Amino acid sequence: MSTGDRIAVAVAGASGRMGRMLIDAVLASGDCRLAAALDMPGSPLVGQDAGAASTVAAGRATGVTITADLKRGLAAAQVLIDFTRPEGTMAHLAACRELGVRAVVGTTGLTPEQKAAIGAHAQHVAVVLAPNMSVGVNVMLRLVENAARLLGEAYDLEVTEIHHRHKVDAPSGTALALGEALARARGVTLADEGVFTRHGHTGERRPGSIGFAALRGGDIVGDHTVLYCGPGERLEITHRSASRANYAEGSLRAARFVAGQSSGLFGMADVLGLG
Image (tube, rainbow, N blue to C red; front, side, top):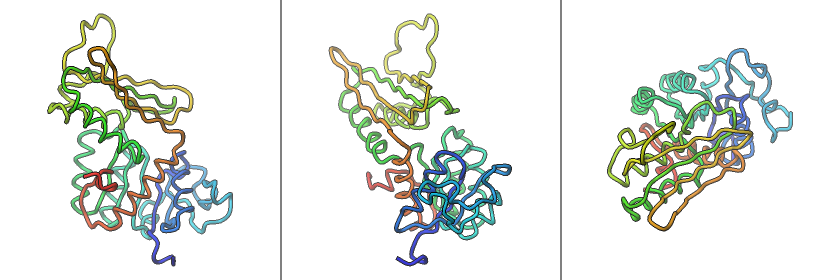
């Protein structure tokens, strides 16, 4: 496959753990090529070859210099993959819109206003937005919604998630997506039925509520469980991530999909053809 046939991918947050994993995935891919590696001003990797952030390259030169110059970095890209922080993602998407670069966004902790702004950008350039790019997690989203619908209101719904000590938002974006899937199955909204804190004398569990618990510690990549607690039985649906490689591979699937779209806001269900 020639260079011109491959999808030109830019990776944001090159010095972060997810950024490094994405660079590795792009370099190892047969149908994508690394067009740019972006990082924040002041990062010690700025000015170095992207091979410095890659296990696959093992220090060998890739020909791509890590840069903090957003527009310069995106100039040769077709698709940006972004797993950074909300403020950075919004700046990146504004540049993508200006330059006509499609985007795959896995950033979590976005506010409703920021999500609305992403929707506005997507009217001009195609965007895949998903709180979790894992193929397994997105199949889980479909399973938990179907299970909630089949089991009915006699079952109490709880979502638990565990992540590494450095995660800055809670509940995780994936946990919230699971809660939204449960709410859809019940015909309610998470804003009305979500319970995110319990402390002190809380009284009995409110019927119909969707509870959340967030745990943080160590280097856990990400565990998510939905519990259906009914009379005399309990069903649990769990996904555990052993590494970030599954997020990176899902992101490349999203990049391949979005490269063929001119505009619109898509999710991983669209990428995977889940309907």
